[in-house]
Length: 363
Ligand code: SF4
Ligand code: SF4
Image (cartoon, rainbow, N blue to C red; front, top):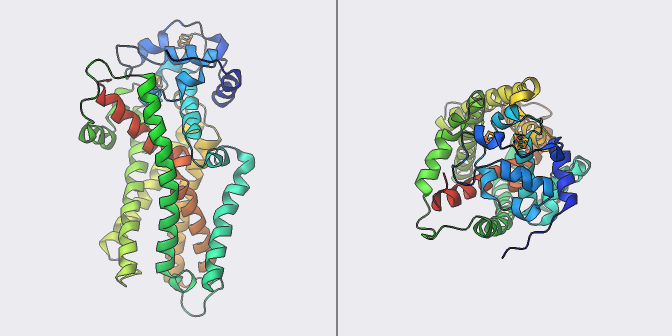
């Protein structure tokens, strides 16, 4: 039998992150009754609210159900004690990806405002070291040519290796997450038959779970704009890497991938604009926005904006082009390499949880 140990420190952290008075929950079950995404069998979020009130960390971390929630806020609107279950579930998700972060300090580094200078200093120091070792850490003469500052081969090699290292570490954490989900929500007698990758991919791409949420429908558009804009940018970046290898970089403005990149930027700007206004002016539905929410939105905004400025600086031969490029590289690191340890890590954890949930028939 699984041993369950209350952790009062964990309960306090959840309270702080969610702004919720957990002791106020009277376990009425309204929240589970109104949730359109909760399965009929062992619905959420009432049981998670009870466990949170007891500080049952072991039952909450590795709980598949918190990832089935799409934070529509319906449960919070219906809670007679104003306990904000939607924000509590969001706080548990945040504690989850911090818990599985490897190396462990990265989870802490990207969740505490006091450590932000260290999180920024790491890429700054590493990039300066790489450029100094390559002997290119200076402003090159002549028309703007970013490869004279950071040779493309070196950039591709070092950034790819560092990204791979971080993602492999993250994969170890996700492996442990899968095992914990199996322990917390064991498959029924029939066990795990197959993992429905295509079905889950369809769910994610169509954002169908957002449609299931009553009041969160307005959030679907913003989420889709960000999701597809970001995915397009990754695709364009992969193409750009191949273009540097085949000496076809920089891309002309008329190149289809260049056009795709600019369209992706517009999608991200629009998604960010909608999301920011929703978080600022519709807190009733979108809940409490904490440090990790804003950090992600600001980092994506800076990534897109600096990318646009770097492009303009090259065409316009701006004097500050290389400074902008350096800044852009730091933000690329922040968003892409730190991805599994920030709220963007939802991409991995939610996908893994959906795969597990659907493979055991939990809908
Ligand atoms: S969180 Fe609110 S709605 Fe849910 S069980 Fe507790 S008191 Fe009831
Ligand atoms: S926020 Fe929405 S999806 Fe999440 S538990 Fe509450 S009602 Fe369900």
